[in-house]
Image (cartoon, rainbow, N blue to C red; front, side, top):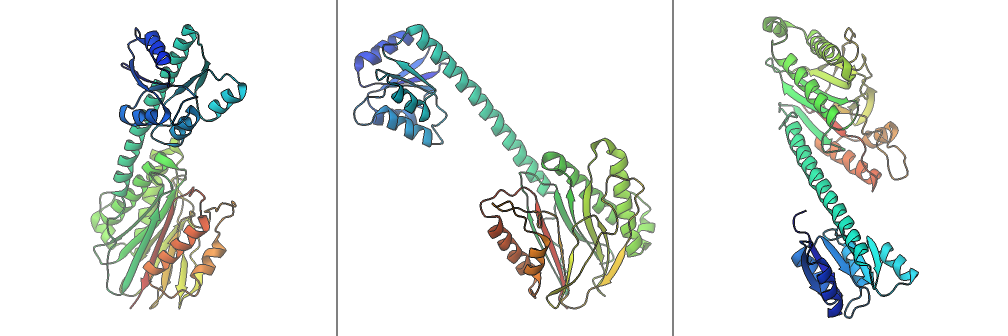
Length: 391
């Protein structure tokens, strides 16, 4: 810490002069204040590295100065050493309770003063380095979040007679949840929603891998013959996409033991046929006339663990005004302040009887989740996707 700045706060000029003399050979920048209010003004204008604070002063005493310093986020980390003639234990305890880092009686021993100042400045230096490091980490996470968002679709595809909406909220700076929706060259729609195990940066990195592999495998011939992929039936195309992604991750990244739950659907936008694979994900709900008529149960294991895993494809047909609601486990597993989970039953009760469009439905779910969570921390990512056949 080059030339640390020390603020001396004392209403007695003699005491200020004495402290300045004790410190003049130690390369400190010394500033002073003669009362509590003057001290607070100097703190905000000069930003000292350490404060030597008297307690008994006019205008504002040292206890009030401590209270204001330690309740202000911009000044609470400045170390304060109380130097006071009031040596009663009660006064010492009060000063420490209010946030003072140390307490020296008057008259003080110079060697002890130097040692306490040196110790407090070293702690301040280490704290500043820690804050600088944390700010660097925050910036890196901000960059990671921006990059990760680039792996999610910037806009959803549009198609006559269909409505699509998504709600996504990460629990941390980066997420393990992901979703995608895109049109194939033949005009059909692929949509998916997934959740990588774990939290934080590791899950976020694998989220980008899963999502990229699935889109690349579904839309190009990079991992197969293009002519062959174009002639595959919806069921065979889904099997190819999921089997390739699963095999690649489980073999290439076996040591990481990272897997994802996933629901993927291939929707024929002309006749409403939905082919899907559910890889251990929460079961999407099919709403017909506003009521839940079925849940699309898992048809295979999670992806990324078993190289030769088999995945079954199921089919249903969406009628006019049918709606598919897909979601990750961040919905039923979310906890409130009483440590109670939102649960699937609460979600079913919420969506049953709802005959609204996808955007309105997701907004209603989101508002109810927010009310349920209250002041509790969101510990898992939340992702919802709704697709409705409107014509």
